[in-house]
Amino acid sequence: MQYLFTPPPVVSVPIIGQSEQFPVHRIYCVGRNYEEHAKEMGFTGREPPFFFLKPADALVFAPSNETVSMPYPSLTKNFHHEIELVVAIGKGGKNITAANAMQHIFGYAVGLDMTRRDLQNDMKKQGRPWCIGKAFDHSAPMGPITPVAQAGDVANAEIFLQVNGQDRQRSHVHKLIWNISETIEHVSTAWELQAGDLIFTGTPEGVAAVVPGDTLLGSVAGLGQITVRVG
Ligand code: MN
Image (cartoon, rainbow, N blue to C red; front, side, top):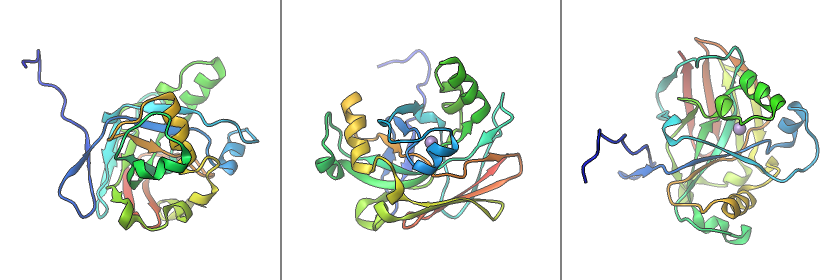
């Protein structure tokens, strides 16, 4: 096959304890999936889960023991962090039941659903798509993937984010409104999941703005931590 120009490289993420990279297919994200975060965004009650996507090449790999830089994006004056547990799908499927969902997970990682909150809010008000607020370049920093067997009890893990050493977000994965299995069930009714898909499962309360020069440190217990400097 000859291409008109060189195709972009496959986006991939290292795997803890393995030499192979995890090739990324799609990045799904769950909206408002922790009750206290839903409240801070002005919503209450258990609504059906909803989803948006980021392009795979929005991913910025953040190795566990290094600080990576993430450019401050254009157009925004309110650039927010959202620390999230990321689920890496190893086996695809349609209409996966929650009872079978765990068989489809390869591993887990720590991720940031970076958000241009002012643009997202404008789009919400106008009933327009969130893409400009959520799916911009460099909007998905994430760490290496820990295979399920080494990840420990992720469903009950603590999740936190600090900015310049100060706590901003601190919660537990068990507070997810739609847990990991239920989320996979819902996503797979709307799209056929494929090996290589990533699911950002939602963020707990405490989202706030960062500015150039800030350093974000995020972690999910058992999955290491990521450190990202806003450039
Ligand atoms: Mn999010």
